[in-house]
Each structure stands twice: as structure tokens, then as C-alpha cells.
Amino acid sequence: MSIKTDYKRVAGLGSAKDGTHHWWTQRLSSIALIPLTLLFVFTFGAHLGEGYEAVRAAYANPWNAVVAILFLIVGFHHLMQGLQVVIEDYVHGKAGVVLLILNTLLCWGFAIAGVFAVAKIAFGA
Image 1 (cartoon, rainbow, N blue to C red):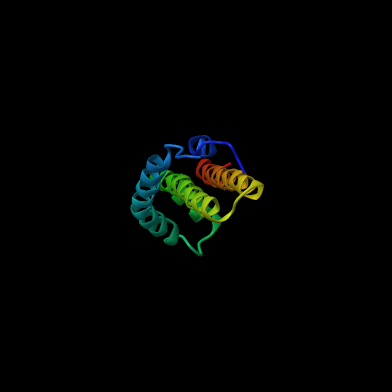
Image 2: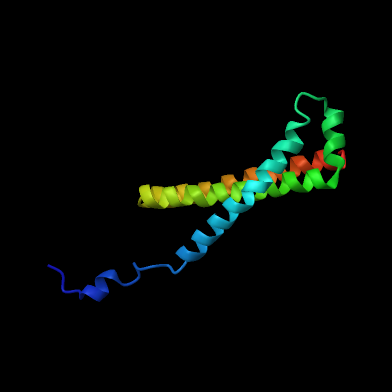
């Protein structure tokens, strides 16, 4: 039997006051991904099967490189937020914390690697 009051039992376990921001950023990123995906697919898809020089020439155009970079950043940010919701809902305890950290590190790592790859192709290094 516990002598704690109901308030003391739940103190610190309430809302983090971050849910609305998370919801909005996830919706905005999904809306931004619609045109970014179409632009990326059309610019990238037009050069499928071509050689390295043709792809390099296409991504030397700043428009194509910026579209690809924005697609990667927004896409991986949206993925990170979606996976965060799934992990928070279904994984509890220390495993949940570890998965949230891994989720953040992997999504940012892949986004940075993708941006670096596009920049390397665009600048011809």
C-alpha cells in the first residue's frame, strides 16, 4: 500500500507539450514531399541507365542538385518522425530509448551521406 497521493503518483508523467509541434511538422513534411518526390523522380528518372558523365552533367545543374538535396533532407526527417511515433507507441523501457537514439543517428547519417553524395556529383569531385 502506497501513501502517495494521486497527484504525486503521476507527477512528471504528463504531456511533454511537444505533440502538436511534432504533428504539424510531420504533416508539413508530408505535404512538402509530394512536389519534391515528383520533381526528384522526373529529374532522376530521366537519367536512369545513362553513364556517369550524363548524370554528373544533369546534377551540375543547380536546380536538379537542390531538388535532390531537399528531397533527401525532408524525406529522412519525415522518416525519422514516423519511426519515432512507432517506437514510442510500441517499444517501452530502455529498449525504446536505445531505438529512438539509433533512429535519430541513422536517419541523420543517411541524410548527410546522401547530401554529400549529391554535392560530390554536382561539384564533380
